[in-house]
Length: 120
Image 1 (spheres, helix red, strand yellow):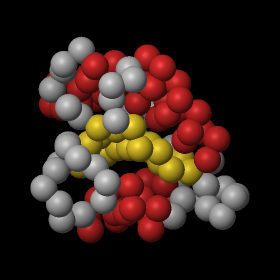
Image 2 (cartoon, rainbow, N blue to C red):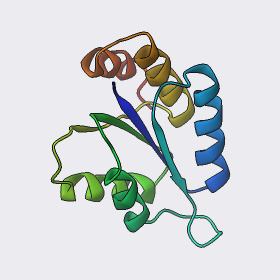
Image 3 (cartoon, rainbow, N blue to C red):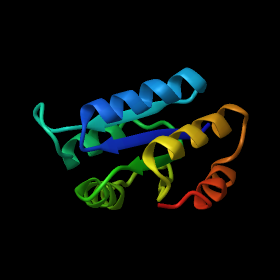
Image 4 (cartoon, rainbow, N blue to C red):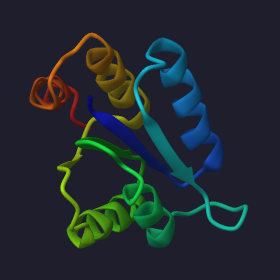
């Protein structure tokens, strides 16, 4: 099964998106990170920590600015056995679509194709 990784500048957005998506597709593994030291921002170390916990191919979603940059750097540094895909779909809608598609058995490739129609 495909996992989902959510990166936001806001802890509330990351955790809220995770909660929403989990309610609709509870069997999908969702990793979420947002904020730095109780404030706004993203942190490559937090992203690397989450990526280190993935157990299958993963689709990554981000919100704005440096979240993309930090996510791209973390993905480049990853040397594990799973494929990491950065989606350009909006964070909430994209994560929702990916999780629902995953819960009905769609392949990672099929999910990515559907997400391509939602690009920012």
